[in-house]
Length: 178
Length: 158
Image 1 (cartoon, rainbow over the protein chains, first blue to last red):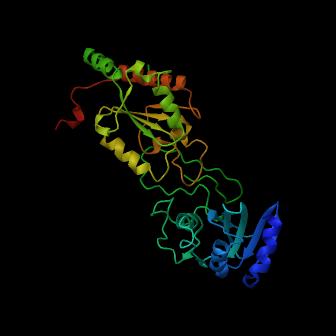
Image 2: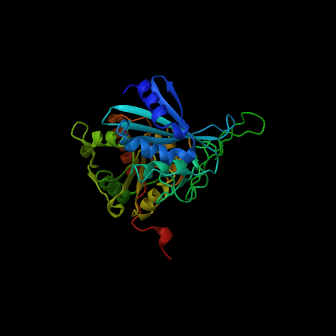
Image 3: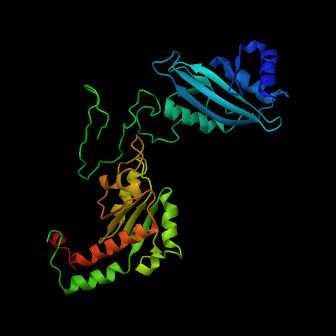
């Protein structure tokens, strides 16, 4: 199925899910409310026309200060049977949970742990939602736009004399912290 | 001259013995590891310098060679390995990441291993060419030859 055909099939077959579909640079994109992600995902996996048997990627976007709700959770689905792809986006507010997809695609386990680790988006029903890349002692979620990009949290004391370099960009803003 | 120390015959003999029997502990974390393998392989042949035996136990190693990016997460492990090595010991920072953090000025990366362990030789480059690594190794051998090698650590004598 081409992207246009896939979009039209989605709109007709899954009209009860309130999808907002579009074509973005030749790719099929569907926007859905976070509460309906699980219903949409099970339909995408089980229905013969779609048969999305691979979850290629699951990530998030932080639109801090540009939009509300703040986050997009982005799913990339692929069907090895029909060779078509779909991008699904769900707008999520800070602190709002998203239903987990671990029962449908086991890889969602690690993807969702990564999104929790780096963005702080909770996935309700996840069997083991703990950090996967950062260490347990780490405070905060480093890929959020309000986390300083160089906000290092050392686990051990730095014993060597480190020159404290501070560069002032604007009044009161320090870009390089020791 | 600054940096020169007065050595006696025992220092010179022990220095000569130690500089030609370097047992390296390769702490390899990233892409620089390929470069280290090139240096160790036949074309560049680090064994010509007596440094061809990697020891994967800190108890048996003289030189800790840190090859690649060190993240904040693995920094305590690197520190523990350095602490477990027996004296005399030396450290080589292999490549830009191990030396200063390289291109990664971010929340995850330690900005140079000299923040947690003392470093003898820095090898710059991303990645360093094998010739640079051999040059760094020869610099370390020169340093080992010219330093003092006390038979008894006076600071440990009660």
